[in-house]
Length: 135
Image (cartoon, rainbow, N blue to C red):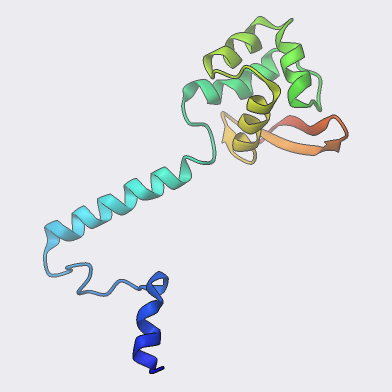
C-alpha cells in the first residue's frame, strides 16, 4: 500500500488550508467564521442553562431553602412544599428525578448569577448536589 493512498483515508485529520477557507475572498471567510460561531454555540449549549428558565432553577433552589446537599429525588420532594421551586421546575418541564438530575448535571460548574451547582458526592440513593456562591 502506498503512503498517498493511506493518507487519503484519514479524512478526520483534515486541516484547513488557505485554499479550503477561500482566504482570498473576504465574504466567504466571514461566512465561514459565522458558520464556525454557530457550530461553537451549538456545542456549548450542551453545557449550562439552555434558557432563562433553566438559569432560574439555581436561584429557586437557594430561595426555597432546599436542604444541602440533596439528591434529584429530594429536590422534587422539596418542590412539593416550596412553590418557587415547584414553578421553576414546571417552567423547565422537569417532571421526574431523572430529568432533574440531567438538568443539575448540565448546570454543574457553570456560574449562574454568582451561584454554582456542584456535585457533592454520591450515596446509594443517587448523586448529591449542592449550590454554592461563587464571587
